[in-house]
Image (tube, rainbow, N blue to C red; front, side, top):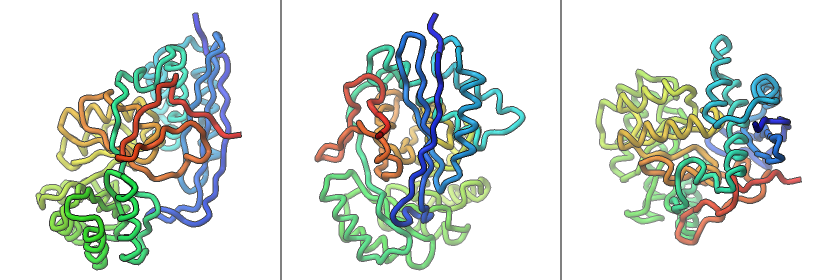
Length: 350
């Protein structure tokens, strides 16, 4: 009977040379989980806290591991995930979910390594390539021409599309017009408003999205404004709303999917609580014909290839990547494919 012999958590604090993304974050804390079973097999997992403050999450991850995994009989990752999640009944999701995410990824990696199969196959999928779009390097205050030039560079490098930052204000059209001119009328263009809009400005942004043929607009309203999103989606401008990176709990994802709010769903590994709930969200979305475009981590989420009966799109926005080795390489035609190696193939740099 195989048991989990050790569960070790470590915190890696990473600072950026300059603020990145639409929120201008200056660093990220990475919570790394390493599991070893009584047969000597290991699994590596990780989660993260954008902007720092990961010490609390690391402590929670170690506490969860000590309570639920240390010397536990090895079960399937979803079974372990459910056991741990039940303990949040009186404390809520919050940081608990970010901690669980690291353990869940480690459990999936351990499971795949024990099977001597790529993580994609352990998750029930295959090895098919998946398109990757670029969103890193764009800032909400950048000069429109600089944004357009970066977008053109990404498309020339073979990415499947680009997603610049917008502010849900009067300056959005200049940015979208410049980028559309730079990449051409057929290229995939998205926009990320980073929750900056209100009812009026979000509606205007969606109208621009329809005019400039955007594939979707990400978070035109604050993520917790469910009533606002319902009203916005009911206006039916022809533009598609993407949401999900701030959501926790399958019930919140279900509301966005069942209410017709999300035309694209974007689960975040850390916030959602790991691969197990992200895959469940993907399956829920696929049942409604909704595109799944996970937040960040294309080299990990590529393992969802074929694991659900729907469309998958990956986002290239490097945030934790340089802390690990073994990421799959994007092909010249903008596609990423799972590597034929046991588990996810990643290791922490020393």
